[in-house]
Amino acid sequence: MGKRHSKLAPKTLAELKEQTNFTVEELQEWYKEFSSSWPKGALTVDEFKKAYSTFFPLGDASEFAKHVFRVFDQNDDGKLDFREFVCGFSLVLRGRIEDKLKFSFEIYDINGNGYISREEMSEVLSVSQFMQFFLILLAIWKKTNINILIIDKIIFPIIR
Ligand SMILES: [Ca+2]
Ligand SMILES: [Ca+2]
Image (cartoon, rainbow, N blue to C red; front, side, top):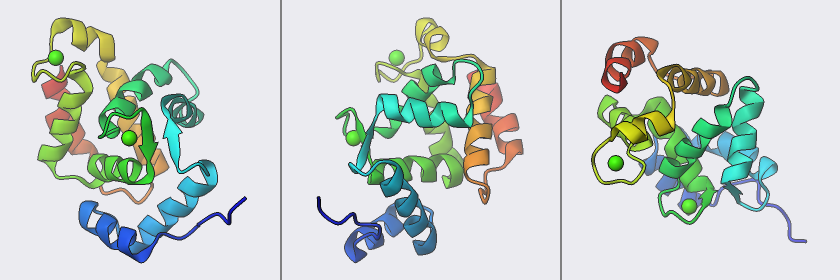
């Protein structure tokens, strides 16, 4: 058994600092959490669902978690590595409004053809689940700068 790395390599850290809206300290903190929760260095969709449902045990949050996973998994290999994980959270929690809207769109556009069909809309989730998702993220990331008003005034009407 090799020694588990609980610190990010300086090069990776510098790259992630560029790619996300987190500070060096926050990234180190995320990494520590991530590597102790998923020592393999990546998590599967089932593990993601499980983590998700511990934050939100009621209802079928795991169905929605599946779609979040799909969008976070940038290289489509069925695993979330630390980079994808932290980039996903950065986007949702601290991204520009345009990026958050793009994220919302991709959640619904399951086949990635640039359109949201009626079927995709009903497949994904109800609006209330979508709102829950953001509230869960808020709970996870207390120091978030996400603005509830932005969700309410911009994302909510768009996905309705
Ligand atoms: Ca991946
Ligand atoms: Ca589509």
